[in-house]
Each structure stands twice: as C-alpha cells, then as structure tokens.
Image 1 (tube, rainbow, N blue to C red):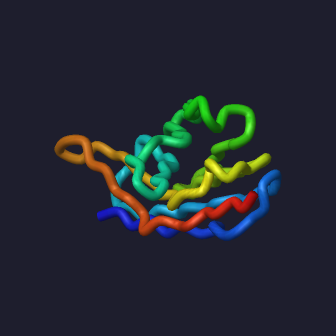
Image 2: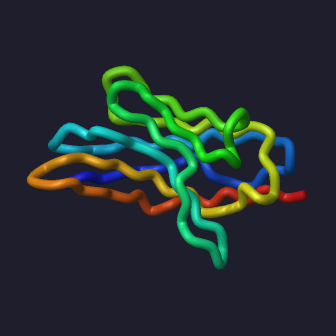
Length: 117
C-alpha cells in the first residue's frame, strides 16, 4: 500500500554533510514520516520524525546537527545532516506511519551512511 524510495547515502569524512531524501507513494494519507538508523550490532533507533502538521522530533544525539523537512504538498521528506561524526555511521531507513483500519508502519529499503574519521 505504501512504497518508500530513499536516496542520498554515501561515504563522507567527519565534519562533512549529507542529505537524504525519501519519497512515499501511498493511496492513503500519511500521518507521520521519519528517519531511523541501525548501526552494526545495535538496535534500530529513531533519528527524526515529522508529522503531517509539521511538528518535528529529534533524537538527542542529532539535535542541532540534523534537520528534517517535508516538501510542501508532497510525501517527500529530507534529512539534512551536518557536522557528521563516525558515530552517525549506520543504515538509515525511511518510515511512514498511517492509520487505515488501525495503525500501520512502512519502511524503505535503507541507505548506507558511512562517516570516516
């Protein structure tokens, strides 16, 4: 019902920046979109989310460095990542949440972000 296509990952040196993009194709209204990440040997964790009304939420580890935004009138979100550090290395996943006969979650395929020291 929902397809998510991510782009923008890659290899960057510490202190550098990257921008991730995620576009959703959905037959139903999406209520919240966000970015999560999973580093090797660790659980997936929330990075940033943005609700349909524009309210954003960030993990403490990325506050002040990452910015999530949403294109007007589109189900496309971006994650601008600045001042990257090696600890940001992970697979980043786009997530879309909606409510159709109950809450539903959808995930993108993931994009690798590697920050070298």
